[in-house]
Image (cartoon, rainbow, N blue to C red; front, side, top):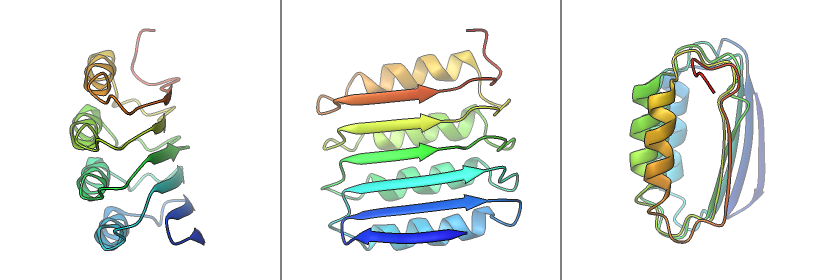
Length: 146
């Protein structure tokens, strides 16, 4: 695990391997809610097979409580096989309430539990974010047809 605090309003953390679980990410989500000035979060997860939908749900709930939050970069969820439509839908519903969000990067390649239906719902939920200026979505090799 790499933990790098860049400033009081930006966190960048990268995780890799099977030892990262929902328990650890639940603690991280609780901690994030105490950072009222947090504006940017960059999280990377590679082959964290013990992360489930619950981690996405907890992160989404934490982010929607931050009034000045502007950027989320969830990258390299590659091989997180326990992330499904349910987690991504619930996460997108939560970040839809972050009215200050300007930047969104979601990279869930190789997550077979994510389908076309969820991608369509995600795109619809993002349409309501008027402040959003940049969106990058990568769902390569998910259970999608496109």
